[in-house]
Image (cartoon, rainbow, N blue to C red; front, side, top):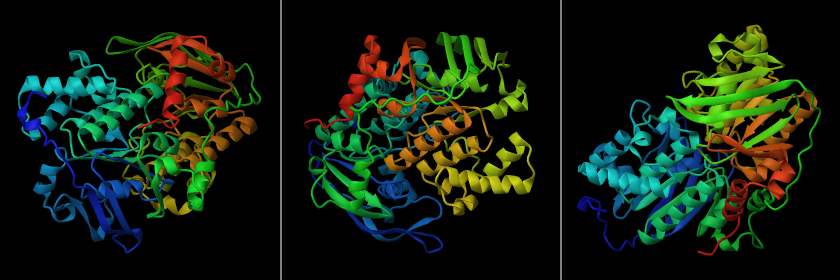
Length: 536
């Protein structure tokens, strides 16, 4: 790096430590009862556990921060000699970014929608006295190259909404690494990434930890990835660390029953189970020559695709390949396209505002970013009831009853009806977003990475629910995912998208087991690499 202010000491030896950490709610409830943690310099520690287990609360505590409604009742968080809990706002601002960085679970809400990408990253560098413009661009270009992002002037001039979810995730990762911090807390950093990009990001994390002697806390529901990419794994349940073991020791005799349960729920990446077709008809969704653009730039090129009623079709491809743009065209959220979106033989208007209420009910979209799609000023119950009243036209009492049943369907307790979205974990928000879509009683569900932030046990339940709906109600699904192991469990047919074009499609077993296109083979090889143990 050319800027001297970004130089680092050659040796970092002191660990990051948490001692006797106790996090409670403002009303006295306990979230983390008492926790000790040590992350040595140069090591990568993985944290796994079901949604709501306290993973994110722990990660935020390392930054000296608690979510609204939570307080640090006791304990210390030590970064060298600094207890982050005792620092003032200005003291924390000096440390955050420079010495300790955070990659949020929800990158869309972490990026300023009014700032271009180059300006947002430049502001971070300027805040820490890296003022030379050429040095800023050089550092941004270096990091973007490492996370697989273009760094030409046109891309850097984009706003966050002009990026795919995976691209937003990679911008957040690059931002965290800008100043080579001593500690990096990463909360579900790979959930929106395809296998190839995930492999590159994991290599970058490994390089940062080893070469820069950084401490990395890697929070993820993807236990198989943690087994492959970390030195040590912590398993959390109800705010307690129930397992603390070297990654290479798991599974092991005498491990905690909860750890055994999580490992047993992992899908087998080598077993491509073919999802049944269910009952399908010729009616359903048809895309005819969809060429979508962003500000005149072609994103998808003449896409033809059919999803029959009762069929689940998986759409896979690298981040930025056009999957989400295509999905948003279907839902009427993206209108800059030529060609037609048809339902049961009828051409639908481009924009959601021009579509009939019946069509809005028919096609429901479950967003990749659940937090940004939930109104923070409404409780979960109000959000679900409003969807029932607006889309289906039911009365208030029916809508309220339907809201409770919708939570039952996605495996959540009805006590969450009174909760605001900001009080929920990422996985809980995702289930609320799915419940809101299902309450409309749709015929087509467009699922954009709907399981990416869910732990394996909850993921299995959601997939089983979707499969049951498809079989019993003839629900059609377009299932966008990066998880190729998951594809074989839910989709009878798979479509592979590369740079806005379909390069391969066919029965899922054929595409996964005998791919024809080199791009598909590349995706599968990267997926296998990130799902198996690797020497470190």
